[in-house]
Length: 148
Image 1 (cartoon, rainbow, N blue to C red):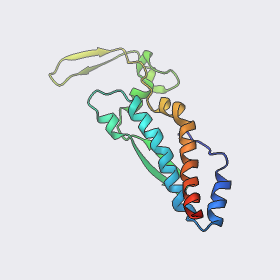
Image 2 (image 1 turned 45 degrees about the vertical axis):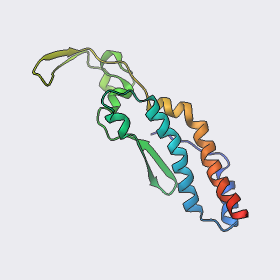
Image 3 (image 1 turned 30 degrees about the horizontal axis):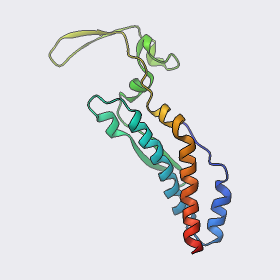
Image 4 (image 1 turned 180 degrees about the horizontal axis):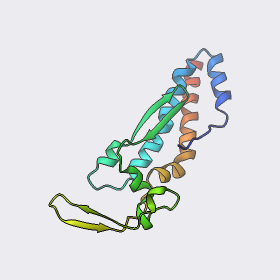
């Protein structure tokens, strides 16, 4: 799991609290807005075969101070990191040199792996600054609303 720290968030939340705003509600809304930036990026970078993997990418609140973007599709790790000798050597499932599998018609095939197609990591690295600004802007909007 990769985390993002939002510098200056404490000051914004203290100001929101002083103005009588709902800090928990504002924080959750802001985190969901920031996570939506990552989700959109992951969906944009996700390779599409059947569309199942792309459609499975979702955002959820983990607790009052953390949101998560991910997928529950089991083969996502193999897409992200690749497989066999063509995959990212930092993950254990890339040590196998080849394997055989039977397709739906009963034909046997030999695979020597696939290269990584990082969509989650790319979305994170390309969008982290934008996501942080989105979180800050969301809380600033709540503060401005209270100051009216």
